[in-house]
Image (cartoon, rainbow, N blue to C red):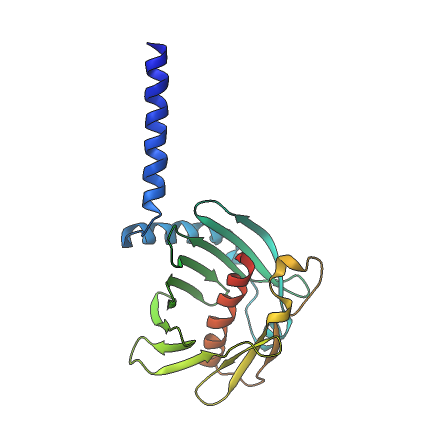
Length: 222
């Protein structure tokens, strides 16, 4: 009788684990929405600490993180808070990569003024800004508007250790790929951005952050 109960218990536990893994394999929209809400709740504790991002904070934005946790299991999860070189928190994130042969992941990033949601599907990334669709980054690195399909900005290929982000008319800034990922350079107050245009308007700042925050997290989690 005891042996039968043990076998039954093992079977139930195994079934529950299998169901959990299957839920993370090609998750449906309901699963993704539920995960996103958990990520929001997880990061909410840091929201009040985040300093508003302006030109000064962009210049001081560092690759270093606090509260960083990375778990590499069947489903890779990560979270952390990026700071300035003076250890002032500016952006908190939570990341979840599902079980899939192609990239299938969800990223939530919060700053003091903005909330970014990134849905990675293969070679495309859908971006939602403050609960409104912003656009989709295609394989060519261009972010196309969700409203009319026009080009909003693009991420150029890495050149001399820099990842330039270019708007419609000019370069918005360059991500310093030399200093990424943060985990590889502990203790060094390395700036995340090599160059940020001096007179970005609000939309340009948002577009630059859309690419920059995504790249910082992607390279941090590997």
